Amino acid sequence: MPRLLIVEDNKLIREAVAEGFEVAGYDVVAVEGFSSAVDALDSEGDSGHRFDALILDIKLPDGNGYALAKRVRDASSVPIVFLTAKDSESERVMGFETGADDYVVKPFSTKELVLRIGAILRRTGAAPDARSVLRYRLDDVVMTLDIDARRVELDGTEVALTPSEWRILVELANRPERAVTREWMMAECLDHPYAGAERTVDTHIANLRAHLGDDRWIETVRGYGYRFARATPLS
Image (cartoon, rainbow, N blue to C red):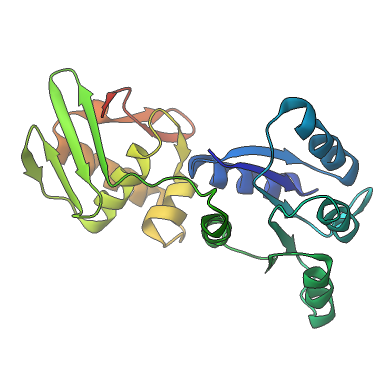
């Protein structure tokens, strides 16, 4: 899986971005400042695990992202994306002149940021591989998800789902046993994070379970959200 370094001093933003990339299949290292980022980068050589991309804030408590980007660019061509509240033309120009591959201004969409990084990594050949067919066994029942055909089958019998139910199932099945929050599901699967939408997520999950005929396909993580079943993946 691609390895990503996030450098962001705001704890809430750092954790939200890290979660978004983790559920998208990335190995994430998230730090809050210049010195901790340098430590993470210096440890690359010792561990043998290189970062495939960097997301950098510009204003850091012990330095700035421009200087960090320049330090990185002097030694590596790893993709760099600035994530910052600085939105003037001069700041953008400086970011690209420093060697950035993209420049994202806060407030931002985590989903869009994931897509931007994915697009960059596809050009470098480091993007996560997308599987077109997923198959899982739960007890004696086999679920087949044909992503391209947008079809789900249980033991060869097609199950009719609404578009929202389909998206939820695919997103969860692509992350087996990884819990995701209701907030993430609203943003990634439903695209309408309005007041009260958490109850809408719960309603979609209840309907999805009814269609699948077994509540165990979608597990509730108390106080957090949901995850796909502890089912056996099939090749």
